[in-house]
Amino acid sequence: MIKESQLLSLQRTRDGVAQELRTPSHGGRFEIVTAGPSSEFGFIGSDPYLTNVGTGLVVPTAPSASIGGARYLMLLARASFNASEAGVRLVGIRQYAELTATITDEDTGQVNRFRREIRSPLWHPPDGDISWHVMVINKVQRDTRNPANADGVIYQDALSPALLYQTLGPYTPPNGGRPWGTPLAASLGNMHDLRYRSRSDQSERLLDIVIPAGCDVCLYVSVRQNDPATNPSDGLLTDNQFAALSPEDQFLLSFSANARYGSIYGALAFDQNLEYGTTRDRNFAGGSPEGVFAGGAEPKPEVAEPEAPRVGVPPPAPVPAPTQVPAPTSVPKRAA
Amino acid sequence: MLPDSRDARIADLIITAPRLAYGMVIGVRRAPYTIDIPIQFSSSTVNAPPVVQSFQNNVSLDTLIERVTYNLDQPNTFPGSPFRSLYFNQMKQSGATGVGVQIDVYGAPRFSWNLTYTDLGNLFDVLVNTWPNGFEIPKQGNIKLSAILTQTPISVPYNIVTTWTGWQCVDSSLDGISDDDARERLRKLGFSVPDPKVLLRQ
Image 1: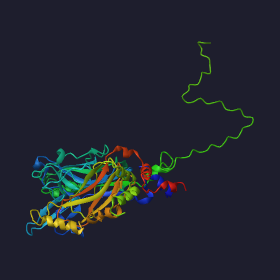
Image 2: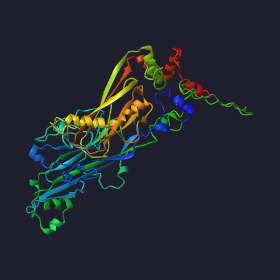
Image 3: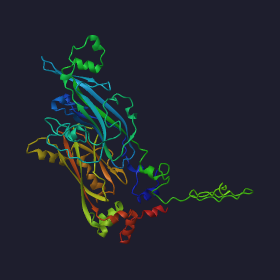
Image 4: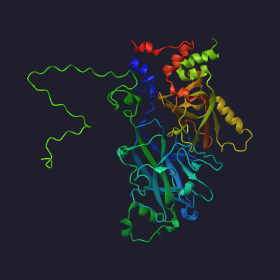
């Protein structure tokens, strides 16, 4: 506990008081997961609030090949840290992507949607792929208002998960399709695989990257939507060959006329530790580099105890100061 | 001393923000300070991870915030209807905006206004109750505003702009003095100023 005198002393410093007063400003460990609109829930709702929201963002169905090769740029997760929030660390990532096929029953008109999680890290459909980007963005405020903004579709950049656009009809991504910001770490700035799986146990222990607060940390994906016309045709393979395929390839062949990317989600886990970067650590002994309470009275130097006289022992030779060069102890040969 | 008088105001600021009180007393030129924190919800997810925004830069001088206002907009709600503005006006007046806000103050000291999400329509009344004469954001301080949806909006995007208004003393000499210095000088000017040093000597 901080003593009253220390509390008062802290008023002299810019650091002020913190730990024991009211500082729940550390989030502990938390994960931010993508949530966005899904037409599947438009009529039935997805929660007690009757929203149309599902986990992940749905990649538009228009193949990238049909819109001039444009890749869909999506913001999956975003966390914002203030300049004073030292000690925040990115500790985990999760990635999820799936294939989907929508087939309408010709007799009843019922729309059926089938999906398959992509579990092979390197797998991608013939005309599609996904790149993942963990980026750091300075604390800037971008005006994202636009009359064309809609549910989960936001102009240029967003504060929460959304498909980002520069123009709609045809879709073009902002910033030339490249994610905003600078990469957080070399291997996280541009990932082309699903290396951090969504079902990973203890995914919050994968990484330990210090965040250069204040900044925003964003997880973007850039998706080239698959053109089903490029899928291999059903019946291309024998039954034995089909059985040897990966589940993703089997789905692709089984729904060759429809299979494309469906929902994508990503998650960032952060650890905002309580034990580092707090005023308490900086001001009090034990955790501070100064080793003293920096906000109170001047630290008193310890009083050196008088050295007891030694009997029969010669005094040690004086030690030269570190900057002094000791005199040579032997005579140089030339002089001799 | 009337509760709303200038003297009462200075007496309060002497306790909460001595440097700014001293600046007021000696007549340092004050400049208005206004800054926005815009928020945008891109989907109607209720109780989702918060949308977080701050002042674009830390404040460069001690700043006294006296008022926070906000406006609400859902561009896709009742577009073209003559009653559209009435809807937002009523929503604002009701105090139930469907937006929960939590505010953390960064700088010195670091603390939270509220520990859980409070509706935007009610939260800023905390200024009137807690800091009736202004809320000080110290030099290099900032605000972190976290917002979630607590009710499903009629449409998204849901745009909110909070505007923080107050003033700063436009004189860098005030930056160089400490709270103790300000108290001491105010004392010399005849103000009644509590002296924490008395307690320190115990």
